[in-house]
Amino acid sequence: MDNFIGDVMEEFNKFEWYSINKDEFPSIAEEYQVMGIPSLLVYQNGEKLGHLHSANAKTEEQVTEFLEAY
Image (cartoon, rainbow, N blue to C red):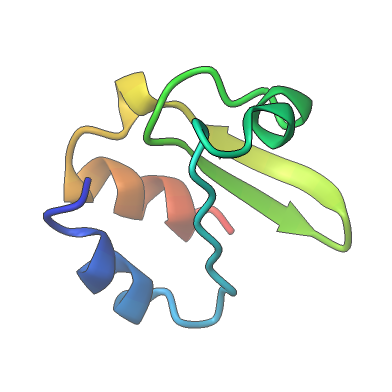
């Protein structure tokens, strides 16, 4: 995902983007059920709306399709 996430972030600039290193913050990863990396989580007003697991985030198209739902 590193190869294209910058372009995706620019396209979906209505979102606020945050990056957390799972190895540096394992308690946060556990709390938000991040088992694999990379993962994308979508929240609005503190409510989790979506979670794109690493198995489904292989291409820019997959990530874009996921984000278009929000």
